[in-house]
Length: 34
Image 1 (cartoon, rainbow, N blue to C red):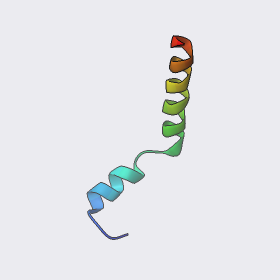
Image 2 (cartoon, rainbow, N blue to C red):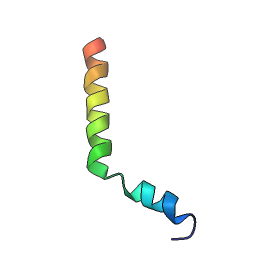
Image 3 (cartoon, rainbow, N blue to C red):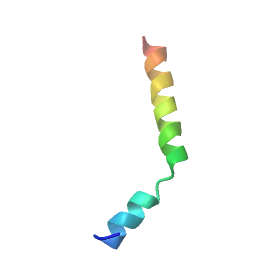
Image 4 (cartoon, rainbow, N blue to C red):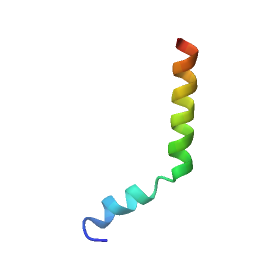
């Protein structure tokens, strides 16, 4: 991988599970508001 290793490591540091969990929480909150 070419580029700043710190930036690359920071991006890899975020697991997909965390992204899906955040999206699920955001969707649940959005549905609760409507």
